[in-house]
Length: 206
Image (cartoon, rainbow, N blue to C red; front, side, top):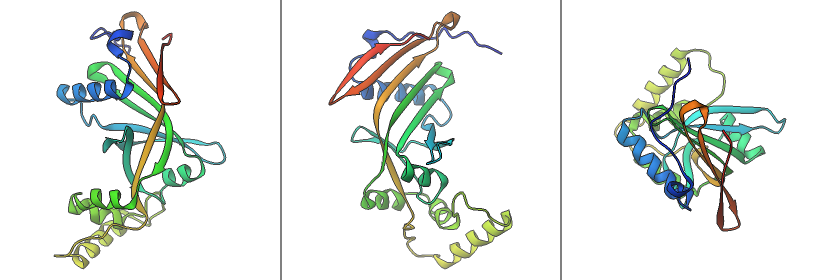
C-alpha cells in the first residue's frame, strides 16, 4: 500500500529562513492544488494524567504568527488545554506529498476576537454551538435535533449571542517541521526551532 513520492523536493535553500512564510506558501499551494479542506489539522493534547488525545479541527487563520482555531472551552480538548497547554498540530496534504508538524503553546484569544468571528459564522453553526455541550453524553440524536429546532425558533429573526463557553485558541509555535515525500523513503525533513526571537534551521534524517 506504499506510494512512491516524487512530486517535489525541499532543500535548505527553498525552505528559507522564516517557517511562517514557508507555511503560508505551502498552504496557498494546497488550496490551489484542490486539497479537500486544506485547513484541516490534527490537534493533539495531553491531559493531567498524561493521556494524549488527537482530533481534527479547522485552522481559521495565522494571526500574529499564531495558529488560530475555535471550539467549546468545556470540550475534552478545552479541558486538556487548561491542564496542559502544550499542544501539537499536523497538516497532511497527500496531493502535494507534504506534511507540516507543529509544536507550541495554546492560549485563549481575547473574547472580543471570538465574538467578531462568531458573528460571521453561518447561522446554523451559531445555533449548533448552543445546541452542543461538546464531548458530553447525550441520550439520542433526536435530542440534539429537537434542541436545535427549539433554539432556531427561540432566536428566529434575532441576533444569536456567542455562548460564554465558546471561543478561540491561538497556538504559538516553538517547533515547525516541513516534510516533503521523496523517492525511496528518503523524505526531506527541515526543522525550525525557535530560539528567543529567532528560528534555527536543521535537516532531519527521514
